[in-house]
Image (tube, rainbow, N blue to C red):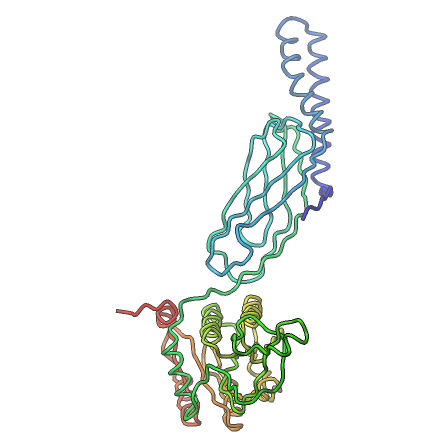
Length: 399
């Protein structure tokens, strides 16, 4: 996207005008000195300064105009990736520039670089953003700054080249079997279902990436000229709904990473999963399967932000949560009374509840009491210390 902007701050304009008048004044003073003094030295000084003054005056009149293009090495990014940024600036008239400072203004790791372009019309800079964090990041504009040899005159312009990138949470090799066993323990006698129950066909829908080949309804496909898949009715499902606690926590990024990796593990195994983020920016994705649904989960998790309040207090009798008939998986930094209250309501409605706690330290005495109450009321608690989170997600075991 190419967008030109000729807006220059007032202070920069005043500085440029002051430099212009300073050059005129110096040129007049040196010329007057040469006229009254005479001699070789005075005229040598005048003719030595004359090219510098002429260049500065021409530079002041020359407009800084560029066509700017920004390219990224990858359009799909995950937290911790490195991304290479290439900025290409093309100018219509090759006015000689002694130097040019190019600055990429961005919300994450901006970059500034000096070039010596001379008469070159096409300028390119490249830089790398290392270990880019999860979230939504903005590239705003590209600034250009140049000047004369002695710094009498400085000239700059800013060209708007907006671009927004969304960095998804990091996906780790997830140990699926331990996660599966933890869910099954939390579900009591119920077994965790990875496949749909194809005993009843409820209808047809458009084929989605991730659907099995055997689900295709060939008659409906021939009738509509679009690939249609069968929609099955499941009498009882343990497909989980992930509920991510978006309160402020030291391990919030690890919790997001854990949620994304666990959801991918379930969906890649043929199962279904949903996602619910309570709070000020509530996000809800009902239980579903397929690659498109997984990308929707990543999109929501990429934009998730921790909040300063206890969001679990806002979930009392939340329809989206309590209408879900499958299992509910809470991912939280600690077990609080409000979280225990929500989980207890679900247990009373015959829901299977598993709570994953991401902590690096042992539980406080008050939290230990809440954990004992949760276990007594039929919930399953999994403690995920910081090292254990890294081990589980990377597949490495602590010595």
